[in-house]
Amino acid sequence: MFNKKVIGALFALAFMVVGAASSYAQGGPVYGEVKLKKADGTEVPVEGALIEAYRTDTTSGKLPSAKTNSKGEFSFASIQHGHVYAIAVSAPGAGPRVTPDIKAGGPKVLVLLDEGDGRRVEEDEVRELIKVAGMSEEERKKSDAEYQKQLEKYNAEKKKAEDNHKIVSAALDAGDKAFNAKDYNTAIAKFDEGINADPDFEGSAPVLLNYKGVALRLRGFEAYRRSAQAGADRAAEMATAKADLNASADAFARGLEILNTKTNNDASIKENMTNTRKNILTNFVETHRLLVLTKADSSRVKDAIPIFAEYQKVETDKALKVKAMVTLGDILREAGEADDAITAYRAVLVEEPKNADSLAGLGLSLFNVGVSNDNKEQMQEGLNLMQSFVESAPDSHSLKASVQAAIEFLKTDMKMTPQKRGR
Image (cartoon, rainbow, N blue to C red; front, side, top):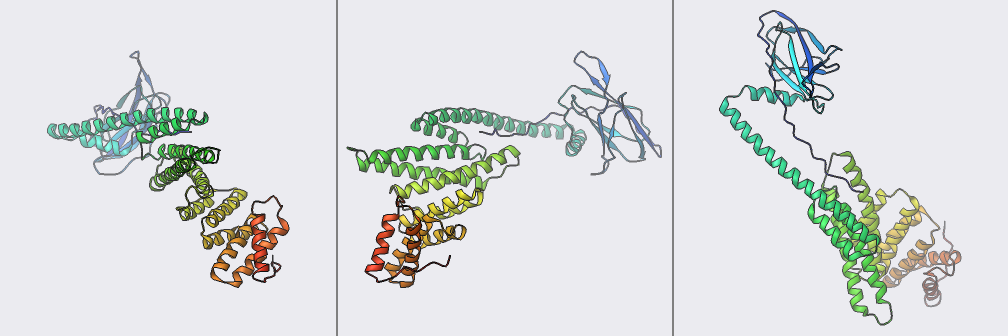
């Protein structure tokens, strides 16, 4: 459910110089041996150690890599006179070592590894070590001081991240338990604790904001249901419903904002971000629906249009996509945004020409716009659509009565006759 921050660790790389006398030969081989010093003090040959030779008398250049044989031996057949190399050695179960100042014709190079994590040393690290080795004492002290400063900063950030992770994990767990128990007050408070611990981290904040948004929506819907009960303070309960549903929408909007402005190269976090985006958009659609259909607040209904469009991009189930398109049309129509509702319903009928909900919704929207604009063409199209609806929809459909009333008005007062649709 939840992904940790992935923080790259800093490594202290031992820099071991093994005697490699200068050679003035025209060129020749370099031989070496790699051993591992075990915890009991014994030394054993290392088979399969990776040997990488980087040229250090220039800023670039590298010989083909080699590996040690069963006796821990390696060799480079010929190194040209005047070329200088640093040999980096890494092996499973060992810490890496770098040996500088390797030239053709020198004595056998002995590399003694300590037990470690098997990390491979990178070329930039090798070159940085060579650079440090060539510094004066004063320069090295300055470099060490800067390194310590960076290390302290890293350690502080690492500790903060670890502390934040503990807080976020605990908040998510406690909030989830409260949510499942329908204790939405506690759940929201716990989710806030997790959000506040690391409010901009793309790996956790959007997840917590999504949970918070759902909890707020459910708490708001409970207030809406209480408002309809006998003896309820309807105004107070509807005010609570409005506040919670709007806060739900705000939580989802903040989650999307973080996801839209952050990137992360960690594969697990990227996957988490993708899944969370879909979850937020799915829940945001439902919150917009309730804001309007409960009559809690229709003032932000047009904000729903881009949210529904984004949802269409991430949803793969055609039935759910169509359902959301119908929902958008419904809430726009209910909020009095007939022109936008017409656009939404038409999009549904392109996908499903006989979709009853959109036939009714589009017919009613065209009827309302047509009557307002005294536009007979729109009224006629609306009448045709509504007639198709009443001929196919069951009497139990929630819009059946209002559609029949609209048809009767157009027939009686406007003297219009339904016409068969082309499709």
